[in-house]
Length: 436
Image (cartoon, rainbow, N blue to C red; front, top):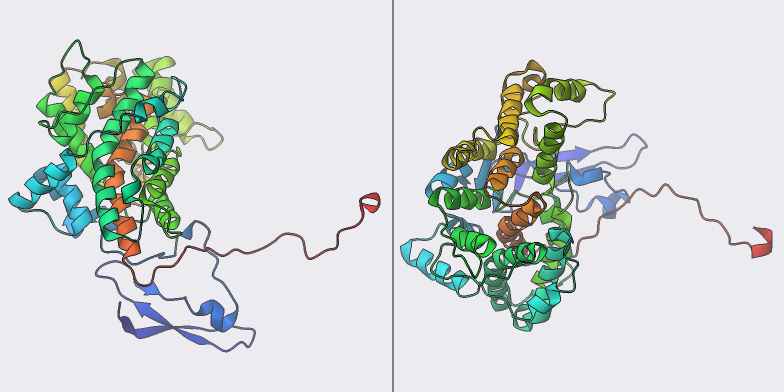
């Protein structure tokens, strides 16, 4: 990083000496004021709850412009990647910085495919969970447990260990998610089929049984592959920041990714598409499409606790670029499965129409987001609502790994240590118990 010729000058009204702060320019996006020497020179911290104005790192992986509705992986627009590339090509791009040529793609696909099976003892570990446990509770345990099964790739400072851990995680996440599903459904686990593509193999492990083979539908496989691509990375969000913070202590990659899985479980983050489908289910219960007007009225009422899930985005102040792509896929999947007249999906499309046309939502830019459409698509594919966030974790794993590896390779990285503004009791003395 090279500082700009322009500096920021910080002055104080209490007579403390002012100080110059370096400014760094990114390739695109806002400039960054370097405050690393602020505490050393002034004894003061900055205060930024939620880190909304703080850059925690420099990164070459993902760029978001929320005002323009732009998402780039390594400089490539998400719109192009989702149309012209598959998920494993996108994984290669995020991990190594470039899209693979044919030979590189063949080699990378083979490496991932050769690691899709998990240690057989993982089955016994899984049996310790209740059958009705939430899949994300199960996934947090399973991913963390990988470090107990694969001791040869747990040194975060060893490049070879990080490489094999990355391949293992990308390869085994679909297997673990499918195992969690099969366990909850009381069905036998299905082993991976290496002749199938990444997304098709996942669908096979999810929906095949020993007594009846499953032939993945190309339209549905493409839809799932697109879901994976659109969720692969999203800059320094809560779960990615968790993975970086966890990894900054030197913990192993499996533990760091398990921390990301736990963070993603939150309804404000990865659980949004699950919350969206639950909302549609609630509207369906009270009367479906005919009651949608009443529901919208409650959403607009400031005194109501009813929330509209799957609309608007914290970062995108314009239309979420992933939502445009997912919308196409959503309508394609509903058409291929003949579900346009299914009551739940008719309700979803009616809600979409209102959000795109109603002045209340248009003025507030509460457009349908990627969670709205991906939830509908996954439901149409036959994936249980409780599994949605686990599939999000599966897709995001490659982004977490790429970010973790980037942090470890950064000479400026240190163990994370946020500061605080203490507003508790002033120093006081402990009295004997009889005097308290």
